[in-house]
Length: 242
Image 1 (tube, rainbow, N blue to C red):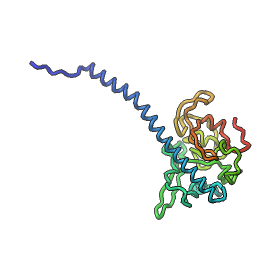
Image 2 (tube, one colour):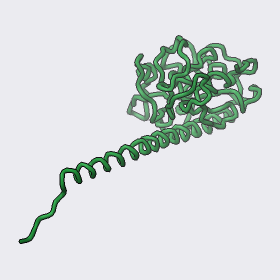
Image 3 (cartoon, rainbow, N blue to C red):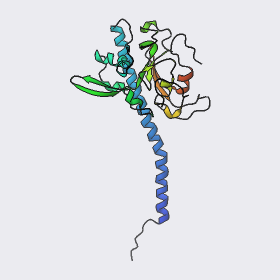
Image 4 (cartoon, rainbow, N blue to C red):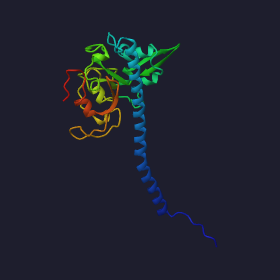
């Protein structure tokens, strides 16, 4: 008589356990790869924005594209849309970081603007903020790129919770997916609110994995962790990093 052989309950449980272990090992790696891919897209966006800034400056007497008064969401995005309006940006997708997420204060709503392309309008989320000392609308120190001392050290633009970043509100950059309103800066670096590579840090923050992609005035771009942005990043000539 021919016998039918099948899995015993114990064998089945062992197989399930092995699959669960493998899944547990693979899922974090897949999530990390997905996060790295988003970070790479963000860097590509910043590279293109930097190149567009260089072309804009070359054609406009070395000047930065600027935001204008009065203070409004429409005008604070002007440093980006001005380059788009004169044809230096081929895609509006460059304005948006794929890693950008909603925060508790609905910051994405504050950073959303409708842009007319041809005869059609489209809502765009602006994921990047520029140094107010460069692009205004207030406290503008430098009006031209060649006026900036040590351009390889001074922050120009990067991942941020708002489109304009004043020197007194570093949190807009180091907590680039953070919870605070753009009019206040009261929270220290928090790995939960890093735009990219969110991870835990030690008490001093030196080993924080979370941070932002940023572009310097000389238009080179780097990933910097939250501690560096908060304590060591230069915002203007007389700024003394901690």
